[in-house]
Length: 126
Image (cartoon, rainbow, N blue to C red; front, side):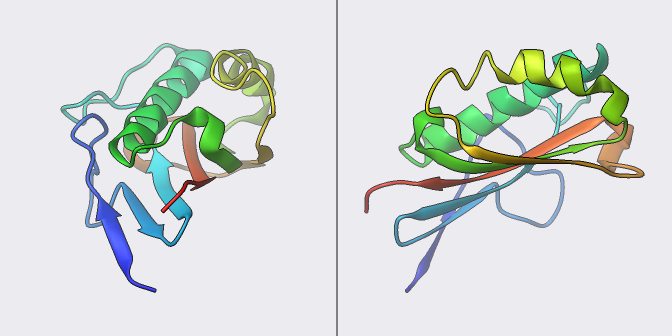
């Protein structure tokens, strides 16, 4: 199966990787950081960072012709699990029903010294 690279001007890639890759009905979305369209880090704690990560995820999905309802799996990377409740409060603004499967893991460090990064897998029609 050929792969299709999905560019996303609304969510910048800050390195040598694609924002998303579509293979058949599967869309693999790279980790989204809490950065603006210019690649500048936003601040405000885990809740604000989660919101920005998910806004960027939403932009990538839209570039692929999908939406948050197509997401089947999310992985949240956090540098401090003590902030889990703030992440979760922001997360539930974007996923309100038929929740995707999710893993949340604590990591030692993330790019640009952010506290949250989120990647996803979605299923969309060909």
